[in-house]
Image (cartoon, rainbow, N blue to C red; front, side, top):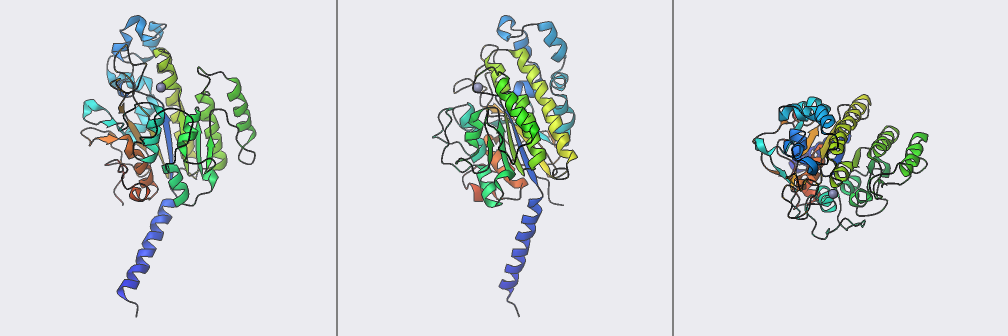
Length: 368
Ligand SMILES: [Zn+2]
């Protein structure tokens, strides 16, 4: 007769296999919108900036007001991001509205992009990341960990982004999985004529700063890759929200957020139309840092510019409760995003990073 210990080992093994099998049908997609403040996300067009005259960077105030100004903050945010507020949040959750007692902050003290993405993807602030320089750091990222632990093919994890910093932050090594920077081609074998065309267009469409490519093209490229190669995990890094803000063009920033809302809608509807993704895909949307709170400093972000530490996180998916807009929620940080991604794949964040942030409280439905 088998010993109880042997039986326990057999059943324990079966349970592990079941957990792994359960996890294998899940996908996770991370979308980052660079430097989007909680003010616009939760309240739409900012009354302080709208009233600040020449400082606002609004060229035609009547046009911008007609598009985005409404009497209440709730109406303004729905005018700005109708899919996000009308469809995504009611079916999922969004954290970070401090007026409702939900606070999300970054833990790194620098409050700009690379330190933020490093914290997000490794589960803790990384003190050696001190600049936005395009270098890799020897920290295993959550994408590296998923690739290694689930033994995925290199094409099954994909990163697309409009800035080369995203490609660098994605992995500790070149070539671990599919990574695509601001102007990179998609290799033959993974590409399609549509992708080749988008890559060519990316090189022609001049972006505001030479470092970045156009988000609409990056979005289309990522979507085409997703349909062709069906990655299990995708990180899409978009950047023009940060660009328009740095340029002090509040009108263009609002137009961009409205466009980003269209991207989210198209992405979500595409996912729900494909067997590989329908009802088995979690979409996490967040930002790397906030920005200043005043009409003078909303354009900037960095250590010392108060407000730059304030961020937000939205989640929709089959394993996320329909909590809507979180209120009276425990404080959450950027360090908690990696563990939250792992929980949706059935992976243990403590194995990834013993000292890293935990999964976001209340972000996983109780098992049925
Ligand atoms: Zn910036």
